[in-house]
Length: 291
Image (tube, rainbow, N blue to C red):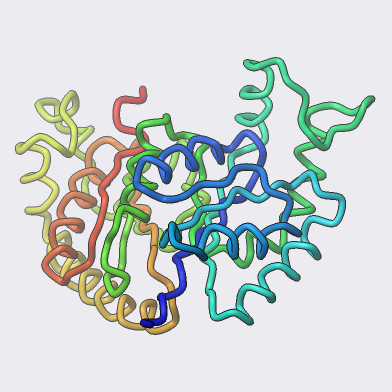
């Protein structure tokens, strides 16, 4: 009898309120067998149950529950047991800013699971960040959902887990405006503020980097194409090393002042160039449309 290959295993964790359940729903829609809010001690048992037998599944996603009293030690023990069986789980970590998490809890009028009887939501958030600090450092993919709607989060999950070849680096290229802050989940930050700003050209001010006139204006600047040439080669070089080291996801944040003109045009062009190198990518514009 042929030996069945080990299942793919994704652990979904991160801050409560950051979108773990939404991520689990997307994975389920993609054909993953999803177990939600599982105490980490039960992880090896549930994997053994659903990966064995006649109706074994090949893709398992588990949302691990931070409410366990010894969350991190229990999870570390579970991961060691899985690795001893030849499994290499991928860890997806979801996070968001404190103010965003507070607003989300206030909107549903529910307490944070770690805030205690007399604590505030912020107290629970602080405790949870401390509990998850080491786990975040070990994550394979970190997604900051502070500025993502459910559709944008879905696109990121689909881009990461939608059946892409494991030997292809998957990049999220996100334009942003520095005045709104650098994306916290960025692996690389590209600063496009060295290019002339179309905002100061009256006929271009109301347009964006998605419009042909703005794109042509940005890319015709003396330093734009040489910069893209060199950065394209750099990412192509890094891709080989990332894959060799088991890192399959990278977030490249491309910024300008407001995230409307230069960063948008450069992000679109960079995405098109990286696809010619076999690097899969999803181009997003975080701050496009903001005042």
